[in-house]
Structures are given as C-alpha cells and as structure tokens.
Image 1 (cartoon, rainbow, N blue to C red):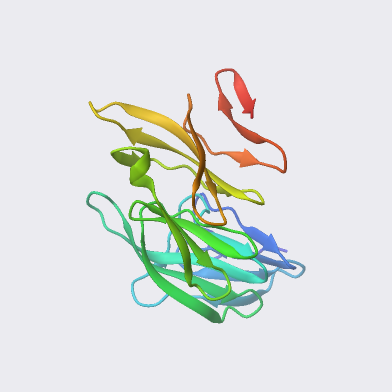
Image 2: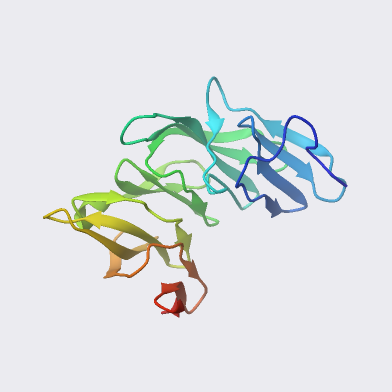
Length: 219
C-alpha cells in the first residue's frame, strides 16, 4: 500500500513511529496522522488547536509510550532565543483522543519517554512529567553546567538515566562540549564529562555510544 500521496505528506526529516500495528507521522501541514500498518488506511488524525503545529525537529517532537502518543505542537518565535511556544499533548494511540495537555515553552523540541515519564527541555531546564497525567515530577536546572547552554542533542534513556550532549559557554567566552548523565528518578546529576564531539548519543543496557576521534566511542 501507499499512503499520504496527495497534498498532505510526511514532513521533511521526520521519522515515522511504528507501534501496536499503527504508523504515526507528522505532516507538512503540522498535523499528526495515524495509519493502519496492515492496510495503509487512515485511522485518525490530530489537528492541534489554533495556530499550533506539530514542531518538526528531525522527528524528535513525537514519541510513543505505553499505548499513547506524546507530541509537542506550537509555533517558533523567530527571534533570539528561538523558543517554541505551545503544548505537549498525550493522545490515545488507538483513537487520537486527548488524555492530557500541558503548556510549555520548549528551548529544544526534543521529547523522549519511557512507560512512566516524559522528558524534554524547557527554558533552561530538563523537565520530567508523569506520563499518565502530565504532572511535573522534577526539574533539572542546566545553568549549573555553564553560563549558557546551547545546541542540545537528542535525549536518550536507559532504565535509570537520561543522557544528553550540549555546548556550555564558560567564563571568557569559551564553548565546551559536554556529555551529561541525569537520574530519571529524581533529576540529580550522575556525572558530566567534556567530550570532543557534539553528536546524538545511543545507549543499551550496559554501554553508551558516542562519536569519537576515529569513529564510535563505547563507554
């Protein structure tokens, strides 16, 4: 089958999410489509309210967890610091009905989730929400890691920690690349290291993988 062949199509740079027999993808018009993975038929679509659109950042503003779709919809303020104003929505995966919604300003519209929590960046802090009801569990203030934080890479998770890399502006104007590990239970810093490259991070049960001088570093 083929789907979304007309004027509405998958947004550039977006990676579809496949889960529980469905394909979820945000579109060029800023909506979220749910397509049956077996037939290609449209099951439902979600159109954010007002002038909000699903934010396209390499497919990182939509994720799936525990039968629900978490999506960030808003608009970008086109002047420094280029923040995104809008809402995080939690939708029923099989119907698209809204379970909860929360207003947030996202500095970097990357969202990740596990079965219990949703994680993202808002105005200089990493924030953790309860995935079932949207209540805030904790905040991690990024200002403790430098005078100014920029170019945060995609967040990734393992069973106990969250990892992200970023530029930190230090006194004297020097920018340093850092890799940060945060506890997902309480938001405390587990460790932080200076790194050579600012790249997305991957993790499995035992190891952390990042770009290195001559390829991939396994830590």
